[in-house]
Every structure is written in structure tokens, then in C-alpha cells.
Figure 1 (cartoon, helix red, strand yellow):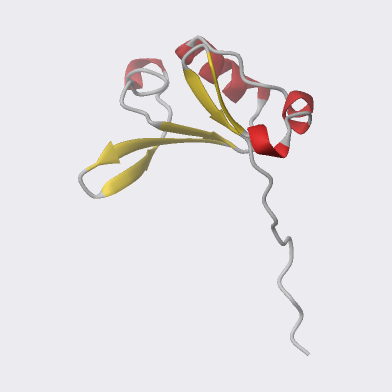
Figure 2 (cartoon, rainbow, N blue to C red; figure 1 turned 45 degrees about the horizontal axis):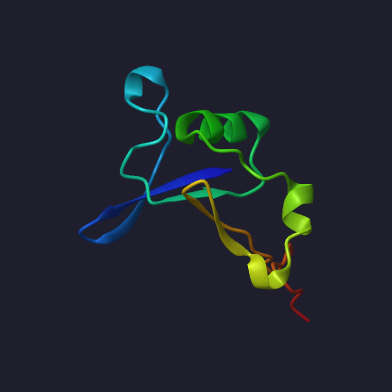
Length: 92
């Protein structure tokens, strides 16, 4: 899933990626691009739009916990592990 956020007077606003005639694929004002289990097409869109290489899942697994925020060629990257639940607890 590709989520793009831009700054507004009210805070960050989530905006969709454009598609050709709708404007640039990723707005130049984007300050946060969140790739949660991205499709190969979403990865290619980000890479082409920003001129960066999105790290693979394997590369991210190898990053030390203390190095999860880093800069590479002017782009800031943050990888994180989140705890999540997949089902609601049963009511007993």
C-alpha cells in the first residue's frame, strides 16, 4: 500500500498518487511516503518519481535496530517493526 502525505495548515494530509493526467505521480510537496507491503508497481513508481532505490524486504531485515533511520543520497529512510493484531479478541 502506498500512502503519500503532504503538509497542510491542519497537519499532514494523506493524498493519492496521481496517474498521468491527474498531475505528478507523487506531489513535490510530499514529505512522507509510506510503503506498507507495497506492490512491485508502487515500488517502481516511487523509485522512478524520486530517483531513489527502495530497499528490499531482505535488506531491511539486515539493518541493525540502532540504524533504522538513515540517509542515503539525500533521501531519509526509516524502517520499523510494528506489533499488530489480526483478529479481535473473542468475547467470553
